[in-house]
Image (cartoon, rainbow, N blue to C red; front, side):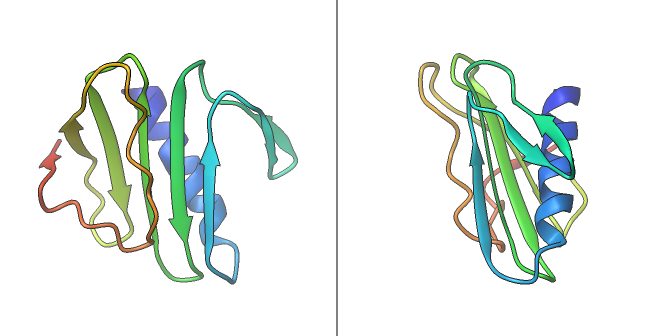
Length: 104
């Protein structure tokens, strides 16, 4: 979970630096972020959406039974059960609603 939290924080922070709406989805491919190469672990999906003033991010391992998310409104990490073999939920809005998720 610590690695997931760090990944969410990294991508969310970097997306906040952009001045326009952006959704980023990282899976098994690497990408350059801030001059360094970043690649999530195999079968980990991380999506994040941000504007210049807001962000939300969700991450989960395909073979895991939980996914984790956060946003700029509340510093908590939220968790939700998911089926094994299913990718994590897409974070398709910077104001993702975590009200049905459990805070950690």
